[in-house]
Length: 181
Image (cartoon, rainbow, N blue to C red; front, top):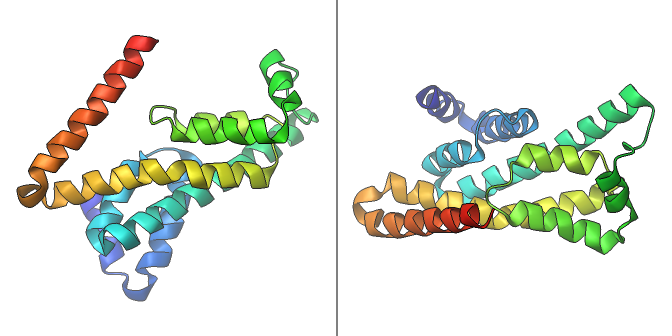
């Protein structure tokens, strides 16, 4: 499947980048494929800067659209602005800056699924602009890490040591995170 995607995008000419962006947005709305796979394909095709930027933009736009669709679907289906759950009431009563920081923090944590953040944000009264800005800022480090890993995998002969060190650091952070739970 990845080879087919690479072939399709590379043979699309001038439509390759808009098609890739649309593809990335749709995948982020659906939450089917991990963003790292898409980032890797984009880095392979357009290099670290352009490919990484395209992946980041697709993730941010996809998350924003998912947020709006989820919010609209919940409100249309229930007739309520947000559920009457204790933790939702608590989040809704937080000051605006604290709501923003909570989304930003969740986006910065590497092991929190993006779809869960989309759903939780949509169920609250969090402002869309705050959600989108926190998502955009919070996705920068994880996208940069995905770009670095993808670039090093593509150039493994020259970058194998750095790749090993980065993956070792990621595994160590994950292990420490799991031990704290």
